[in-house]
Amino acid sequence: MNRPDARNLLLFFGVGFTLLFCLSPFVYMLLTGFNTSPDFLRPGGNMAFTLDHFHTVIFSPQLHFPRYMLNSIVISAASACITVFAASLAAYALTRLPVPWKGPIMVFVLAISMFPEVSLLSYLFKFMSALGWANTYQALILPYVAWTLPLSLWILVSYFEQVPHDLDKAGLIDCASRLTILIKIILPVAAPGVFSTLLLAFIFAFNEFLFALMLTTDYAARTIPVGIAMFQGMHGEIPWGEIMAAAAVTTLPVVILTLLFQRRIIQGLTRGAVKE
Image 1 (tube, rainbow, N blue to C red):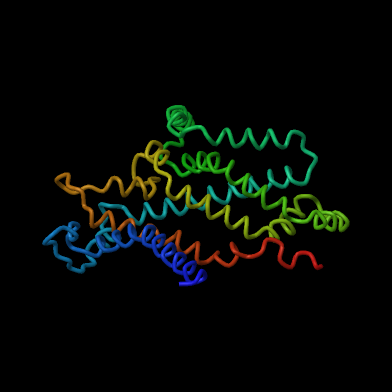
Image 2 (image 1 turned 90 degrees about the vertical axis):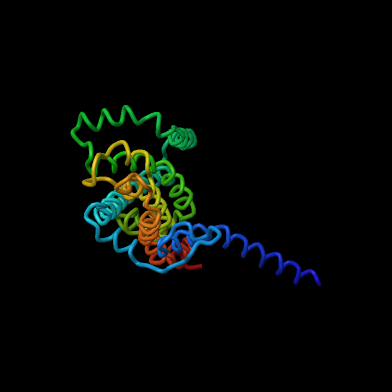
């Protein structure tokens, strides 16, 4: 076997192992959701196809799954949009304006993001209760924005630094304001970075568990991760079929977002912005 063949073989096995490692939990989740018995992999277990678990999850009024899905989408989308907008303003200022101490500011922002969530829960709960925001959308949107802002800022700063400054000069020559330059020039050019940041912020908020558990009390504002954790049978048994079916449906928004924005995410950052 020559060297290129060996390299291709190693690449094939490496990609195959990675796919198997990453996709096997999702395959097991789907098989369990479509099976009548959660222990079908045990010796002597039977596999029988059914849609009852999905029907129960979607249409059962006791589980409130559609409301959990709506809550998660609204809260995640709102927090992601607010985060990206605020991070875009800050990133533009740090990369375009003569802001002193840019390096220490970035390090300080990163240090703030390293605080563990559990250390803030009691104070955050008291704060939200004092405002009367407990069990509301804004009780989750505000912490999610604060928690994802440092990461979003770092990502957008790295993207904005690659955008040519000649674009800003051209906008200033045309008497455009800094905000107009940001919205109409910088953001369209840095669209792959903006969409990537938006998607990451959405996924973080969509999957967050601890804040959603402590700041919500019922299905009015409870999100999907907490809602699924609350699934329980009449006699305390764990309904694995319904849990896996709900988890499978939960992945759909993230998959759809990734497919819709795939082309924008992988685009060249400044393709076509400056003619050579």
